[in-house]
Amino acid sequence: MGTELAGLIRADLAALNNDASRLSVAPALDAAQPGQATSSGSSSFTQSMKDALASVDQDQRSASDKMAAVDSGKSDDLVGAMLSSQQASLSFSMLMQVRNKVMGAVDELLKLPV
Image 1 (cartoon, rainbow, N blue to C red):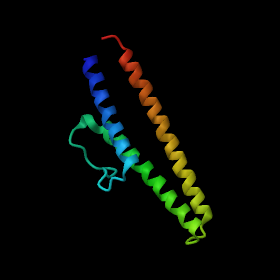
Image 2: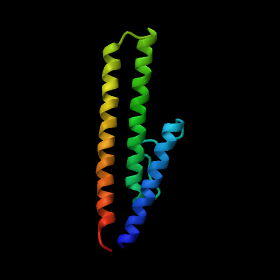
Image 3: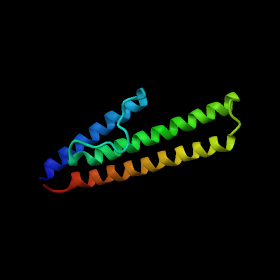
């Protein structure tokens, strides 16, 4: 059972890494929408992580757009742009903390005797 669980965790991690790579290389227009139903209950963690990645990516893009508008003179909402930038930074930091906790838990699971 421990080996099966480790295999499922590795498969989920591989899927998350692939999704993260795809988000960093090219924006996915048809990326999973937050709250979208999953086909199986076992992939709910994977779907939650995909939703979190999509949300952080959207925050980053929004902050970038607002900063670009301020830089080009199209907008004078510097405070809004800075707040959006801070929100994006905090959401990214939170995502990294979750990632670190998950990776620590996976390492502990892999160390368990079979």
